[in-house]
Length: 315
Image (cartoon, rainbow, N blue to C red; front, side, top):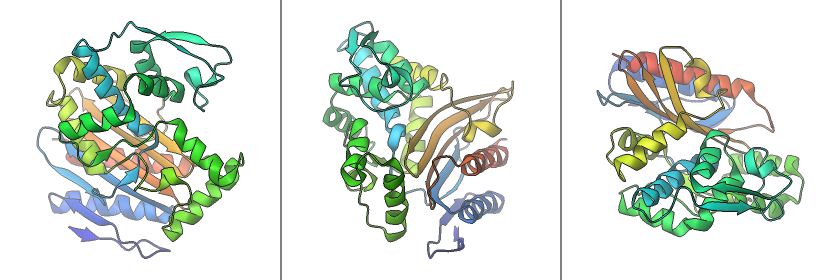
């Protein structure tokens, strides 16, 4: 274990690696992110050997849309238990639905969708309206309680998806640029103005906790096999490939993941599986130190971290 001194701030990421070569990769990724003005957490774990590398893996971070993964697992567990019907129709009215640019969130007219397809929309295109329609059926407190019962103590569910935008509007009105400026300023000061960027009030998780959840999902060690199998299938349907998946696209590789984006947050978690049998679970949770709605360099750095970690951990 070691620390790397990033340029321009006092934070020293705590790196972990199960041997010298893995530790070197973790330190390189931490330094690369720091050079871009990115603070974050990263963890990659070989699901079969248990070897790992990363840094700041226990830091609690607001999850944004990564929170849709534990929500999906709880909903799928209820479906498997017969407490909820995947075919149940749910009508989503844009006049009362959640903010977002994809799926039902972007619709202009009411639509009726089955619960199972709300799950698909939520995980494939990160549909906020679909997620909050599911929260109507399985409330936030119930999701959080179920996670506690499963031993997922370092993943906390505290709010619906739309609450992130309600808090941003409360702090900055309808000025998204101002909200982003506040997020960046507050990241430097460590005093969040927007409530859902405060780990004490946001839905949060650590890289270690999220990778631990993925390990249990891929090993059928949480909920029931019918739920975990469907979650793996749905995560494999994600359409966004600009982050960790961007360096893991090949006929011999399969990526199953979920992104999360809100103001200066850019996250992704997932599992890469190779035809050779190698399986590596990863979590990359980042906060940018600049006002940028688009940051392809940060996303490419996340992809490079995923590639380097996979190559270092595969056997």
